Amino acid sequence: MSVWFVTGASRGLGAEITREALGRGHSVIATARDVSAILGAYPEKPEGLLAVTADVTEPEQLTAAVEAGLAEFGRIDIVVNNAGYGLVGAIEEISDKAARDLFDVNVFGVLNTLRATLPTLRAQRSGHVLNIGSVGGFATAPAVGLYGASKFALEGISEALHGELAPLGVHVTIVEPGGLRTGFLGGSSIRVEPASIIDYTAGAGPVREALALNDGRQPGDPVKAAAAIADITEAAEPPLRLQLGTDAVERVEAKLDLVRRELDRWRHVALSTAV
Image (cartoon, rainbow, N blue to C red):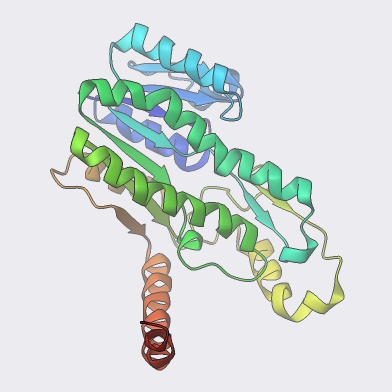
């Protein structure tokens, strides 16, 4: 059985991944900013669960969580970078502080977690890193551009990390979920900047309104998503990217089609700059 290290394990997809791993007989080092939230999420106190306080913006806490996990289980096999949140607002409307706070968690929090866990996976010459991104990190939209940018960054990190860790026997997968019914669009997982610039009513307004009305109505089942994520950790050759949900597949296909059409249309300009 494997040992999982999961950030943001107290609710949403992180909680479902933790439950799925435990249900398959694995052990889980479940982390969150408040350990009591983890214990509250699993009142049955399942065997194999180690709940640890670790804010991903605090490297010392992550190091301590890894040390506690190694002391308890002796190894770490699967790292799930799940902690993160959403941000709504047109690019110009989002304050510098809001943007930096978002990247501190969604991007630098992942880097902090990797620095804490990868020495163990490298020493073992085995393991699997699962970075929970979003279809919005492959094809973003008005009003969620900064959130999408944070997940675009995670795409780039994952692609490079895949090449760096493959020779060491460590897999990397970035998961690109569509809308999941996890409560993500509720107040605890998403922050909304005020609509302060009237010129963006037409461009960003419809997405703002759709997000506000869509909580609990997303097409994706988080329990099935967690099972799919667990399944790929058992594959001999797991994918670099895993889309989850019909909406995710449709958006990725539409983006690929758009890129291909524009590449073909403007190919003559691109090639004209060659020597």
